[in-house]
Amino acid sequence: MKIETIDLYEYFKAERKNGESRGFLTAYRHGQMSEMRSRKVRPAMLILPGGGYGFLSQRENEPIALRYFAEGFDAFVLDYDIAPVAYPAQIVQAAMAMLYLRREAERLDLDCGHIAAVGFSAGGHLCGCISLLWDDPAVRELFGSECEKVRPDAAILSYPVVTADKNFWHEGSFRNFCGEKVSAEEYSLEKKVRPSAPPCFIWATTEDDCVPAENAWLLYGALHRAGVSSELHLFEKGWHGLSTCDIEVNDERPQQSFFGHVAHWFGLSLEFLREHGFEVRPMKE
Image (cartoon, rainbow, N blue to C red; front, side, top):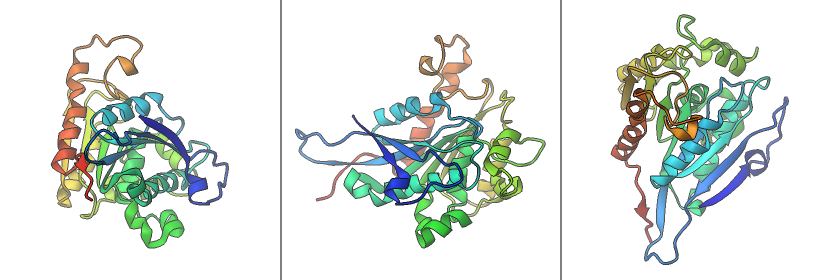
C-alpha cells in the first residue's frame, strides 16, 4: 500500500482564506506489481467523513478507506474544514479533491470514468453537494467549465444529512455549513436533484434519532422522480454513525444482533458500484 497526503491548495496553487486550514487528501493506493504480466487500472473512492461539519469522524475515514481498498479501489480521504469555517470551504475542497483525481488519473493508474464518492452524515451532505451541485457558484468561480468534472460517477450516501425541512433536518450541520453566508434552503438536497445526477446508493436506519431516516427517503424519492439510477436501503434497527458496524469502530465487539445485518450495506454498495462498471481492469496498452 502506498500512503501519501496531498495538499490540495498547494496542488491548485490556491490561497487559503477566512480561517481555512485543511483541504488535505490522504491517498491509499495499490500501486503496480512488477511480477504481474499486465498493469491494472482501478476505480477510485473519495471518502467524506461526517461530524456535523463540526468535527471529522475518525470512524468514517480510514476504516472506510481500508474496506474499499481491500475490494480493489484506490481510496482517498478528504480532511475538509469544519466550523467555524463555513461555506464555501467544504464544497470547494471536495471539488478540489474530485478534480485532483480526474487530472491525475493517468499518473495514478485510475479509471477516470469510474471515480465515486462516499459520505457519512454531514459528509453525506457534502457528497450530495458535489453530486447535485457540482456547478455551485463557488466551484464555477474557481474552475469554470471544468466544474463538470466535479460530479462523481457514483455516490454512496450513508445516513446522509439532506433536508432543510425543520421537521427532519439536522440543524447543527446546516448551521455549521452555511454560517451566515448562504441559506439552508439553498442546500436542501432533495430540492436540487436533476436528471444528470450520478447513480446514487443511499442507506440509513429507521431508529436514527440524530439524522432522521426521512432525509434518506426524501432524497431517494426526488432521485426516482427525476429518473436517476438509485437504490435505497432502510434498516429497521441501529443508531446513527454505525460506519462499518464492526470492532474497528466500536470499543468492544458489538453484541447487538442488528450490527451484522446493517453491516450488509457495504457489500450492497459494492454490488451497486459493480453494476455501474466499477471494476479493476487490465490497463490498455
